[in-house]
Image (cartoon, rainbow, N blue to C red; front, side):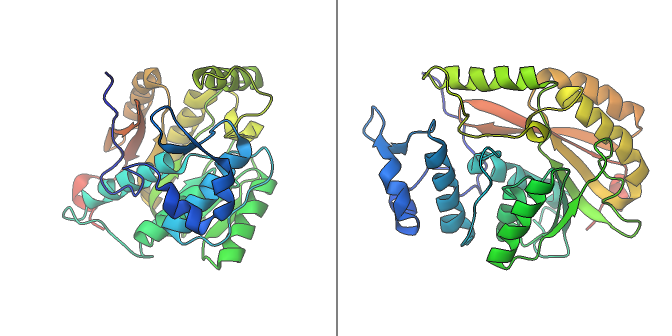
Length: 301
């Protein structure tokens, strides 16, 4: 029998979804409730409406978000896995802070490709009080993120990246300093590859094909020329120009095979240190890479 891997110890969703509690905050979610073969409450994760309502209920119940909505067909990310990244980033900072996790708005975080859902700033601000700046190339995503901020009266800075080739240039000012950057990059190298990924996800769910994916996603969210490795390679190269403006650059890496070539690029960039942080989520392991140009003696917060 496969062992179910656990989320981060501080992840509020480590023990699964408390549907009774979620129904209190979001009664409309109950209409989508079903039971799995073991008789446990769940929802149909192939139903786009159910997944969106689940996300909204989770944000309302666990993160004090009163309003959350995204445009049709935009990426609807699974919150437990996303917030795991936040918790492991907190551990990364703690290593430079006498093993004490830093809280409060003095910690500055740049979310590259924040998306219409704004999930990382919403959860990270609630859990640790950090000061977030969200960046995205898509104007609809920025508009959606701004509406979420306004409706919840949140102080999250949002910036539009106007050049698809740039990652930091144009959104990081000369006086900006960040403790962290985080990023969930486009995974695929083409639209055809993204569509095949959608079909594969549906097959893995065991229900055949559907015209729409429960988690959605626009082109800029799912693919870019060069795919994941091309995007992260560009990020590494461009981070050299902002080496003294960020303590830790980080990015999710979905494909384990990409770690070796990315490690070579990081060595070529002459970073002071880089590491791979693995995150156990359900039956799979995800990961992010982190690199810094600061020598260890200069990393205290």
